Length: 278
Image (cartoon, rainbow, N blue to C red; front, side, top):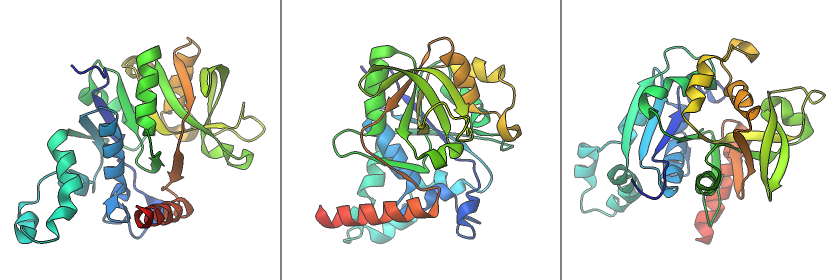
């Protein structure tokens, strides 16, 4: 095993993407492109940059395009062989050559916690990363997952990525409270899923990046369903937080909520302007 203890990254991709209908009626929302690259590829490349080479996907009906994307397309490659178009496949070929991919289905959508629980058969008894492709994160020097992996190597516990969110938006996030033990690193004492502004313990919202220990699977099995009748990952992590086993990290970089139209457009504009500068 390499010096990076975390080899696997889990991608929950079973959601319907209803905010982007009708575009997502027949296409997975994770395949929506920011410029020429789908959201899911950005996520896999981030995991790979952090030293993770085993990608595990929790899929659902209608998600076959994700499997096809991370596979060879012999007919296409034959058609563009020895043309100026061939170089356009260099990035995805690099990902395919360096990673393995496994898939299982979430038969019923019962929340993020349920999706993570389904991942146990792919993850086994190992620490692992979790990336929600809707949250597109960028940082020129070091990816968010690389930052979190480095922190895990120091503390060996569950880590959630956080950012400060406007008070008006706290009801859209899992919100943490905790004690700052180092710059931008908090020992979590309490976590609440989508609280009202009056109930929120802070304005530090969890975004779609996690490093989890395998202990989370047993904790999820004993966690009752919570908000909206779903199994909430936040509730399970709150149990572990009471045991001092969860850190929150205010990451360095920028995050785009590509599950929303404004965030998707902002990400497109950002990466377009970046492509011109580069």
